[in-house]
Image 1 (cartoon, rainbow, N blue to C red):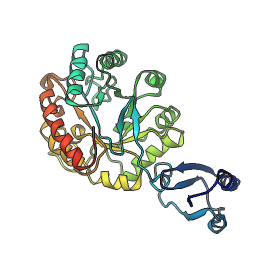
Image 2: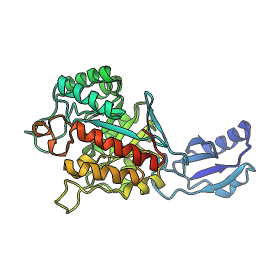
Image 3: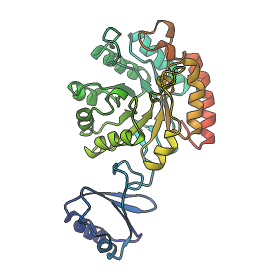
Image 4: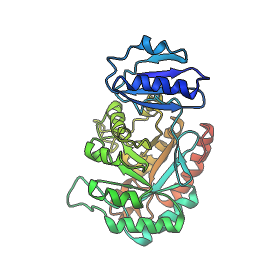
Length: 337
């Protein structure tokens, strides 16, 4: 349930209705935007009388929220959320470009790629220190050593780090050393992990699960936000279907749907979605025109010998060419990098 306030209310009037609603045993979330103020009511609202709230002269209307996600709901916050990480933004009119290798392999590799993608216009550096793999015999990442190398790459380039957290065992380390904590597709419904990152103040990049519905995805975001962390970035990375010509099926329709339902920024990972470097450029361009708030692209200087997902990584020169087109398409959509 949400309460939409009329303009011109005083602080005393706001305090009065807030206390009245709290007396019903629910939690509230006040969002004062540039156009209007909304009071979100979270909890059991069965004993709240809408007519009673409407009797306050400074209340415009009371709406019941049908969706199970509340804090992530655009009804609770009409203005789009913008995530600001050391001056690099994702959301609103800002297009975030996250680029780098699937996994960190060496100091030379990660620093070289970081320099290259920054020169091309990327404003975030991705790289897996810990890698969840389907096979236990596949390369699992350099782990803590990989995290050290990501820090070195940041020192060299200034690019904020985006990397995946797989276990609550490392959460304190990630909070100290990582700029955007990624929750991967396989952990989208790892609710213990979601609760723990919800207690932090770090931006969380939440990837859509392999077979997750849009509502399930948004409910996972709700877990994080319910813990107090509202800095959530949603990432569409393709879902599993019966199609075999692509690794996954990139659901571009999810972008306008989620942006209608939620105020959270939505980015797209065309690399994991397609599994084919040849599809990264067309899917990136389509995602921009579909209204996404950013891209997450795998870039590797030697894809043929990459230790992880080389077939879906593009080379630095290809990324540079793509960025020129992304900038033009972004301008068409009113977004800048």
